[in-house]
Length: 362
Ligand SMILES: Nc1ncnc2c1ncn2[C@@H]1O[C@H](COP(=O)(O)OP(=O)(O)O)[C@@H](O)[C@H]1O
Ligand SMILES: [Mg+2]
Image (tube, rainbow, N blue to C red; front, side, top):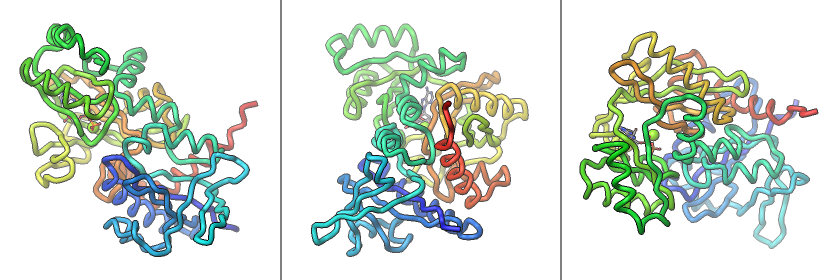
C-alpha cells in the first residue's frame, strides 16, 4: 500500500517560532515511529520572516534552527487550488513542480499558525489537516471571543472587560468600569497572543494604564480580567464529534504567574500528572473541557486550561488549539498517561483529519 504523505509545517513568523520547531522535531520523530511505516513525512518550514521552504535535512537541524540555511531548501507555497492537492515548489531554474500530499500537520503556535489564518488556506486547498478548523482556531485564539462563546454556553470564565485601541481616548472611563467590575489585582492581556506575551498583573490604577498600553503593542483589542486564585490545571482533549478528555495536569509556576520566563526559561516551574486535586475535581474539569471543546467547535485536538479555586469552582482560562508538542509538553504527556504513546497520538490525529475530510454532508 502506498504511504500516506503528511506535510508537517513548522516555524512561522509568530513569537512562538522557537517553540514550534522543537514541537515539530518531536512530532516528526513520532510520526516516523508509527508502525508499518504508514506515513511519509514532508517537512515544510516557515522562516521567521515568513518564507516557506521545503526542507529535506535532518530532524536535529529543525530543532536547532540550522534548517533555515540548508543548501537544498526549495521555496514552496501551498496551493489554495484544490486541483493541485498540495504544494508548488519553485525550482532554481525558474520552473516549478507539484508536490502532492495527503494530509497537513501544522505544528505552529500563535499568530498565523494557530489563529485560523493558515487553516483558511488548508480549507481552500481541500486537503485534510490536523487540528481545529478556521472558525474554532480563530475563536479560541481570541480570548474575548472565547469568553463570550463560553459564557453563552454556561461555562465559567473570569469576569472581564474588553477595550479596543479606538477606545483609548476614553481610557479613564474604561479603567473606572474595570475597577468597579473587576477590582484589583487584574490581569491585562492582548486578546490575540500566546506564551504570556504582553500579559501583566496590575495592582493599582497606574499599573493598569501601563499594562493596557503595553498590551496594545501586540493587538488592537485587549482584555482585562479579575484575578482568579486557584490551582492551574490543564486537560488534553482529542477527537472530533466523539472527543474525549485526558486526566488533568497541574502547573506550579516558578514566578508570580505563569509568564514567558516561567514557561520557557525557568526550571523552577513544575508540572504534576495527575494534578494533586480530588477525583471529583478531575472529573468536573474533564467534563467541562469536552463541553467547551464542542461549544467552540474544536476538532482533532486542544488543550483546555483551567483554574481550580479553593471552594471547588472550576474556571476555564483558555483553549489552545495547537498546544506545545515537545517531549515535555503537557498535551503529549497527558495523553501518554492515558496509555496513548506519542507515535499513537500522531497516528490518531492524522486519522481524525482524514476522517473529518471524508464526511459526506448529503
Ligand atoms: N485572570 C487570571 N487570574 C490569575 N492568573 C491569571 C489570569 N489570567 C492569566 N493568569 C496567569 O497568566 C498566565 C498566562 O495567561 P493566559 O491567559 O493563559 O495566556 P497565554 O495565552 O499567553 O498562555 C496563566 O497561565 C496564569 O498564570
Ligand atoms: Mg495560557
